[in-house]
Image (cartoon, rainbow, N blue to C red):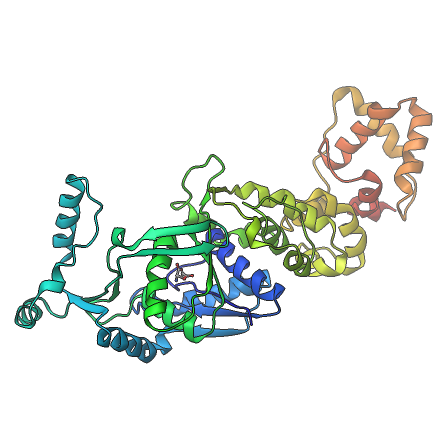
Length: 441
Ligand code: GLU
């Protein structure tokens, strides 16, 4: 059965880059009728925070990316220790004692000689006595996985055929000197034991994948299918990594971005299919195909989310936004006509407030000197209330007959006098909602 997982580290809020990973894994699982696991990668006790675990769940729930179960790496440390023992017994695990400074120096030397900066495995030559001495001096060493120096190959769901020479990669550290288990081994143990069949993650993990394939094989597991999506860049192709902090999902939510707008964009961005606004998750699931994504960096412009949000809102019936309409201050008996008037004139639901204020308080009239008499005449012709959708039509007809004005010369001064703006909602829909005028009627 298809099983995928989204595996965030709870060391911060999740952002659009993480969302891409979460969404792709979610869609693959749902399309196959499989299982989507939320795995919390919290083996780092210092950086992992419970508040981020809660925030990640809230963000995913907001988007409707429901998971089938949650797993936490911090609760599975004994499983990782077991796997580490197994690797030790197999002779694939060795302790190394270099300090970060020493490693840095080695790297610099290698680079100076035009060699790739790969760990030289000096620790493999240490005798037991030398290790004891180093342990006494520096504390426990780190544990490195001894890669087999052969080519590691897989067919990537996005990148196609990949072949990496293991000799060009440093033996990965799987356990730190202080005993902390690192993601590379924890992830392998989890993916294997949880029967994960498909792993989609960012292309920054490609080298990890190469080493993880060897670890999975050493532990006798089955490799999942891997796909690595390209990293997001800004609209000009600039690196987004530094700005991702401001592209947290909760910030986008704050700014009024609608989940379906965000999901519709992210389910297609970087693929050969056009971005289309969808109204239901089911449509996204149906239309998803990981193989249609490309390896090139993907441009992301946060501004693209707003037209999609606006379009999505326009399509909604009052029932879907009734809370937001009430929050904007609109009385329940006016909610229906208010929403009908406002929905094509908002970008986000936050804009409702402004339209309601206009209805409730009126606007500072915008009247050009040459229109003063005209406006006075028009106001005198305003019929008795109550107003409805026909009032604007019959009123402007009467004004036209009385003043001889027509077209823009007739409508624009009236719009500006009533709304203080040159553009806005259909006047026929707005007029019955203008409270000053209603009060008169
Ligand atoms: N915790 C890892 C990350 O957030 C998970 C990577 C993976 O999907 O394996 O980068």
